[in-house]
Image 1 (tube, rainbow over the protein chains, first blue to last red):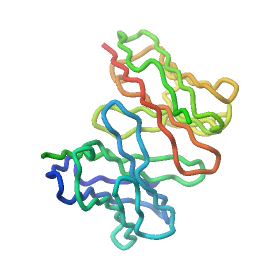
Image 2 (cartoon, rainbow over the protein chains, first blue to last red; image 1 turned 90 degrees about the vertical axis):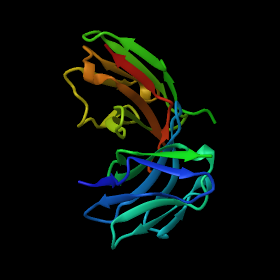
Image 3 (cartoon, chains in turn yellow, cyan; image 1 turned 30 degrees about the vertical axis):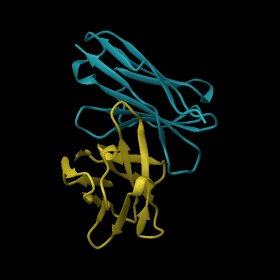
Image 4 (cartoon, rainbow over the protein chains, first blue to last red; image 1 turned 120 degrees about the vertical axis):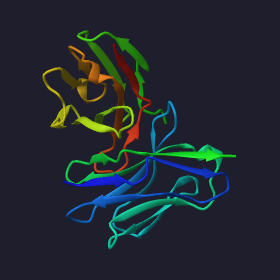
Length: 113
Length: 113
């Protein structure tokens, strides 16, 4: 079965500094991977997706992620954090066949002024 | 375009009572999903519909949970009787056929006392 592991439950950064949220995946074949963001009291929103095209994927709000097969990783980065980036971020893998999403446990990003 | 609608947004019940949640997906989306998100965890798929048929309900506790999708549009999720461990946010999502992106509603926060 496919799964993802988010390596940090909390990440704290200062506004204007880089963001790195780490995710490792487990899959017996080439996976489809996603990052979703969840702001308080709001629905989950897709940030970006990897579906076996370019390994560097650009998403909304300046986020990007790089698929590294050799490291089985799909880390999320942003060059400069903004206060509005404070939220819960989920790394997700899709099980093929029925579009079933399997979520990681989440990383809470805290941004201080 | 209107998003996925869910109601109620919050519900507090006592254990052994019953409760129902309602979801209205984005117009034209064939696939509808119900997820359970327990505090501190990522969402877990409970059931997936395609039109009005069930595609995957392998993680639905069928002794107490039931779900239906009326005429392939709206859906209701019911719990009867509720247990303390059912306290969670119940998320509804929808997607067009054969696409990766799922669109999530704001969720219903259930507290069982």
